[in-house]
Length: 599
Ligand code: F6R
Image 1 (cartoon, rainbow, N blue to C red):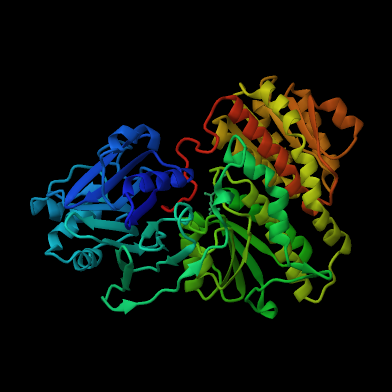
Image 2: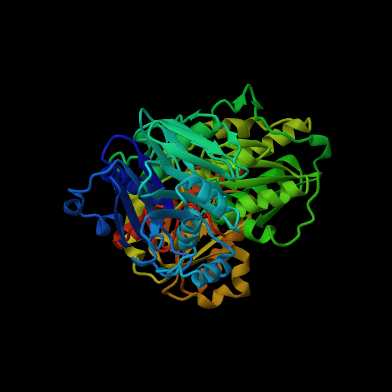
């Protein structure tokens, strides 16, 4: 999703901005732009495509200037093209803005401004800001921004410069904005990744903050123009964690980081057979858990439902955050809401959280990005500590989310005074090693990928706790390889999708040991009988599986509760290798954004 980066200091801004935009590439974008100020002159370059398409070093050689702003755009209003790319300027080309978010009343504002002779160049809602600030500007940029914001309905991470002012003015509402505090230089960004090259001291701006930033000072005000202070935080992860470390893609690196990611989510949370979490709710009042999330995080929530209901015997509902927020859900103060989000910035998940809080529901966050908006708004939380996830397709965050939900299930059980299953606790601690065994099968899975890379459809089938794994396997494949894939509960197949099965249809089965193993076997028989091509993920040496499957990916045996974590790995690898063999941009699949900050 759109990314913001800005610099004010003593160094040449252009190259810093380009490097920063590259750090933001993982968020997904379709156009980009940069603006540098130099002694009352404005240099602005923008266009469709990747940063490398827009940025040519020869164009930048003569660009001097130590103040600049930059943007990667993911189109919402208006096609991805040069005109719609940010930055946008006012009529006099003196005020330059970049904006993340959506202006809901933009049509009305545009009409008013057009009547006042403002000429709009783009189809974007964001350009409103340039003209509105122009309307109010009379030498005081911060004042003009503040007046403009009072007329805006919607969300914004806004960055503004004026060609005559040695300052950057920024403002935020429901769209993240971070200041990076260096020595005689300050950075502005929509997430910490581009700042980490320079400093680990950051300030997370809050909604309706307006900050005026100079090279070695800043001031923050609220909409009433009262001065406020915000704490400076120290980011703990370092820049090495966002490099590829010899892997061809971030996604592959992140798949291989899963054993370590699991160790991180577990660290310090199981001690002497007890689960330690800091979770704020009253167990005696807890009637129900409601989990909301989007995409892959919603799949981990579905697995969480199985785990929490089985282990802690508390009923669980799982909702898409985008559905929950508008359906007047009957949640109340005896419910606990869990929001699951890798980025901690997903607009729908954030809105669901706010909706729950407005009904006095305590909210627990399962979030990866430390300091993200969701992590700061929840009553309590479980950080994943999976490290930065750069590949757009979520992998290590997903398996870490499942583990966090399992820890939560165990924690509730313990709070209810019930004993924990020692075998399960032991199995949890041996899981990272088992993941390494699965990862060692990467080349074997690549051979299967080679055979199926030209398929146009795939079915993924699983049952019980592995049904969400089938959904996740199908999502991974479609988002990075553009092959149509569906995940189904295996038994549902005969109620419709079975019509699709013929010798061209690869069907991936999740058939590991557990309560439904025999049932899945019958479903495999049904597909075999119709000539489908069967790839089976199993931990069993079962003669029927051997007879029925065209290809088997053998995974280490584990307890059923943990099977989703193990079974996800071959599906991630299968999707990865198919996409890579097709020559696709695995880390930046088309149309997708890493952090979906619009609804
Ligand atoms: C798919 C994927 C997305 C995200 C979804 C929610 O691989 O990554 O489906 O899971 O956009 O994002 P978060 O977890 O950041 O709230």
